[in-house]
Length: 363
Length: 186
Image 1 (tube, rainbow over the protein chains, first blue to last red):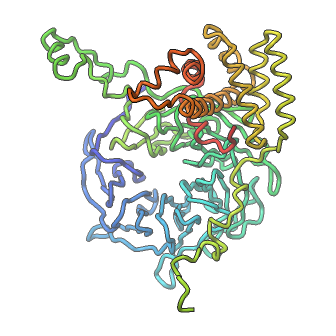
Image 2 (image 1 turned 120 degrees about the vertical axis):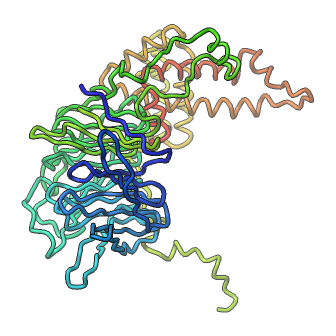
């Protein structure tokens, strides 16, 4: 297994990160702006800075095909940035929310995007050609609290939303004229806008940090603040799910998760490292960490000279410096995303966290 | 109209979309109501197990039948039962018992429940010990009493702390997070 590729960009938390389709451009949310990094050799160099938001940027997503960047912020706005010869051209999207926007994701069709917000609703935004204008339509019911995570189903109609009221919901965001009528699936057959296709609560009703559909879209996973990961397998419209599998882990809660295949999920969070979870409808379990023991550059026990040892004792009152974690990330991992995929599933993932690092892991 | 103080109007009550008007029960997992009498009879059964020397069975029984739906009184009764069991188990038996419970089906859930009772017990002992032990002494050494006395808050706390230590070794920090997150309180 190749060692992880670590890029320490700056000493600020990274709320969200996104790679362009060619994986040469990296966008990270840094305080009130979005930094664009360009790969040069083995490093990423700061190339551009997108400014416009006047509060902390909470979400950034690059559409793989069109290259458009959507960002959202605590200032309650979203921008769509389009490349043009004079640089990046922002278009303001009026979300019509009265609380902060928390996360944003393009639909796989790239014709619309969904924003999570503290206003207990999910604006679904699409471009209206006639008015040359991004319009937002609200999914309101039955969300009771801040939406912390959104994730799209591969059909670009179903949307999963995780909320601090402890529920993970599957909702329809079907917009006439934008979406093609979706194929009937286990989640539902007729899907007008704001149809609730499923509402799931785990045992403790802890608030949800992250949601994700499996690659086929036929299962939903969500991670909550009670250190559990729950996977839901629906049986059909209006029916109770076929299986709801919940794993209570020994580690601290997961902040983000990504399906690497139908039977494997990678999740990371407050433990500062990524874990592999494997299973199926019959049950899921924690299969181990992505961190490999004995990775070079971490447990480097340098041979200390006696003079140095006493110097350290004198200065700090101890010989070894134990302020460094043994993990690659030195603080909470906020976001993990798929970085490289092959026919069988995801082969590389990228993670970013509060420590200002972006790390690319080979699975 | 002019005398109406607009700032004191509770606008949340007038807004049907306001979170103040939610039915909060929809946010918590459903729990079946349990009467205090049921909790008491369960406590009796568990004490019987305890008397016959089956500490582990008693602990398991107490952790599997958690009265989430009971009122304050019932919860207090069950807390007293669990604390009694915890105090009757010797320190050297703690880890083996915990690992056996953990490996049984539904084990993580049982250990989460135990963690809840440990925290609740800690809250209780400190509350009762402060009321009991704060004697008006000018020296400020009033706490020495409870530690030296070998009974009361200090003793109970040291038992709970050693349980806590052993439990975290097996169930990890995840179970502490679950205690803080869980809407089903004991």
